[in-house]
Length: 113
Image 1 (cartoon, helix red, strand yellow):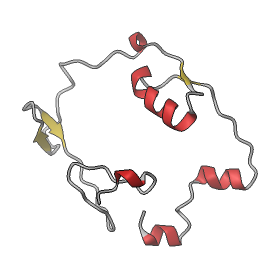
Image 2: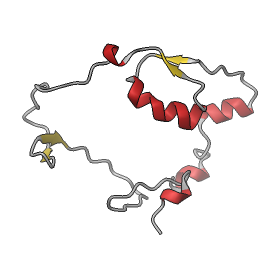
Image 3: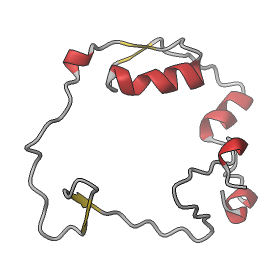
Image 4: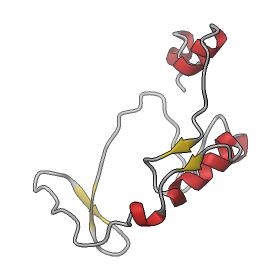
């Protein structure tokens, strides 16, 4: 996070501020949006397995080709398989780039040495 954002108090999430202010919270035990396989990691990592999936893999089928056609005015790049994929650019004033490595201040082991 940028030093400017931290200086303006954005280092603490809205949820954390509400908890500190004494607003009661409830952890819902079942989620219905994500595919069960996608939800396994956040359930285990962030909720100690307390949140379960309320849908089966059959209710969230994998998307298979043909996908909707790409829009002609969208910038595209080629994937390793040679398929066209949309490209998104995000302007970060104070970012860090490390090829092939994810870096997160919350996970010190992931930051390149």
